[in-house]
Length: 210
Picture 1 (cartoon, rainbow, N blue to C red):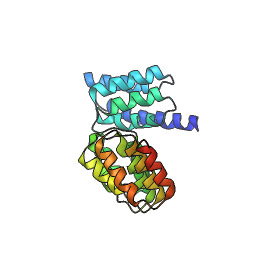
Picture 2 (picture 1 turned 30 degrees about the horizontal axis):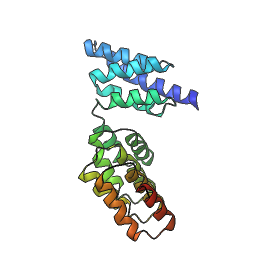
Picture 3 (picture 1 turned 90 degrees about the horizontal axis):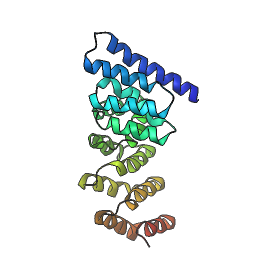
Picture 4 (picture 1 turned 180 degrees about the vertical axis):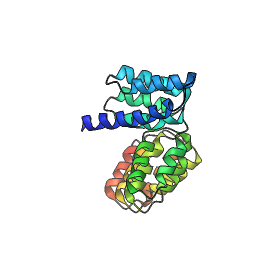
């Protein structure tokens, strides 16, 4: 599987590189070529250096090749890639994939969004939180932990912590338990009073520090 993933990464990077070679590269184009070339290396240092270069120019052509490395086994590589993607306008790309009719593409968009602390992704979480598929609502519950805390995040987590599906509620509780804010505690305390599942009540109590 690792060899297949490497081959896939190489193909995606090659396609991105072709778009650069289609016209004479300027300074940014040369940096894009260099960054994409480094992403094809096998060592973490080279991949991270490539991600840093691509983060400095934030070109659309770099987004898909960087996405491919979000699944790397090396946490250092994943962190470098997350930092680079934070400088790119990834929200329109992922939102378009999420709203496509292709089920696999929708799932991929959610998987990638979960890994990114990007403010532009709230539209995905708002839609995923009310999706008919429980697995997508669960993704929303986990993805929200990477977003900046605020009214939108609390409103969605309050909705998810009362979801009909046990697993969705579990992940929403888990996300709220990671926060030290008063609002997170308020939501958890309110849910504790009405939660019918004994196991989840115990989980909420633990999340509250009890």
